[in-house]
Image: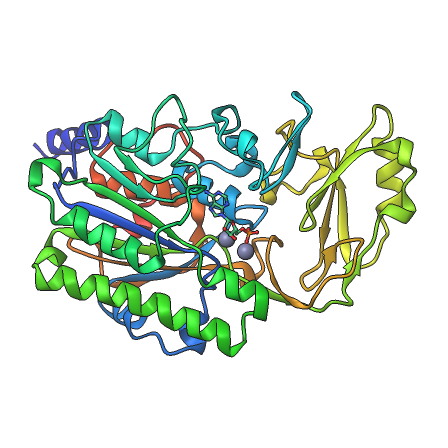
Length: 392
Ligand code: AMP
Ligand code: ZN
Ligand code: ZN
């Protein structure tokens, strides 16, 4: 009998028919919200979530930048595997440079591998509404979320309007209501860059996003939706201070005929002309304040070395440094080794299917599986590990 029950449970889990609770999942990403901001600043809502729900920190995927990590959160794949290997990169096959400001490339689905959760959900009959999550306005596999907004359409919805938008979706009649709602907020990343993680102005933005989430949760409670909504609030990476004197310069060590292109600054990806990878590597391998690898020698824990979009030589500056040739202002930045605590991101969750506990920081490739579990749907193949530790 016990054996039979075990087999049934096993089948139920593997077929994804267990856990279809009918509850709604709301996921909000606060760009650049360091995991320890709630320890530094007054964040009553994040503290409430920690007390009554699940709290942790997320270890970003490498590089700890916005686009690669949001797309990792959405797909459960490392950037090396989903193809958005940086905010900007050279696609060596087409010769095109992908960048956030290059509309033509950014909206081309060719760059976006894997299956974002809004497609996984839609395929399994779940309605989705997504406010500006990176990739959601791109016709990946020819599809968009049921409701989505184009990031390049101006004026963009304010942060408050996005929260109001979530509430408006939740107030729709049950048959029209999305069961997965996702939203992306630019703060506190923007102020973190301009003023550094420990500035008053960044603190104000942390307080602002905390109060927006607090407003959302109070409205949920008012309408008794807190009993049927699992609210997940997370971030893509942390933030570290960089002094304007901390530039790592590489150009003067390289001959122009060796280099096809240099893209990015944390890390810098150097694309070699044929036959010059070793020349570049040997010229740079001992530079101070950076680690330098040939692409196939990037340490395995970074999961970064197979995509043709990664440079032949990868230069990763030490925390507090950037690979940059021109003058720049001191401020905050990120992109560094995900193992550094300064790069870890906040994670909070609260709701009917979420346990009350605090758990050790875990890799953000696990989030996709977790969201699928909350929605009761079958995940597509991904890099996420076992998520039992997230579940009661
Ligand atoms: P990062 O340089 O990694 O801090 O990138 C953060 C920037 O990404 C923010 O300034 C956002 O404006 C920008 N961003 C976020 N989502 C998108 C998008 N869908 N399209 C273009 N830029 C975006
Ligand atoms: Zn970011
Ligand atoms: Zn940023």
